[in-house]
Length: 183
Image (cartoon, rainbow, N blue to C red; front, top):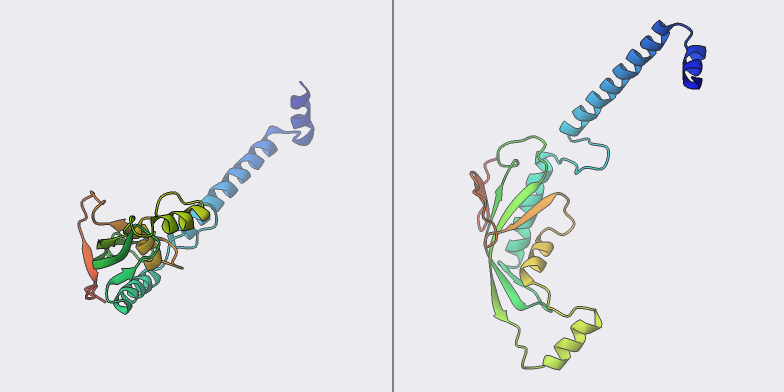
């Protein structure tokens, strides 16, 4: 009863109430359409992952290839379960390669091999004490550390390991040891 009285007091005739509701619905629809247009144009505002420009994605791919060439494909990974990681090949795949102007992320597929397992018998107490002092009871994985190093200071880069990836990939271009992406 009280609520009905408030509605009747604010909107004495029902047509004014209906006009106000229609106005608010139009405003909500317009704001939603603007937000969706911004999202697809790479200017999203808010909680989700932001899209990137194709130019930025290719710049990141070139930077990854440059980093691997700078170490000749051998990344030293001290304090991990292997002393070094040999990167054989790196491919780019996904929406960046398919030609999207604003891809969600840069997808890279890495083929690598880990060399020289850390000897635990020699200096075992030193290694254990060092890692235990940092709260680490298991050695970090050299593959993950290599992938982190490759994409350091890069946003929206998805790293995939060839050994673990089981999804079929239709189109992919090699970026290391040679650059195969058409410009």
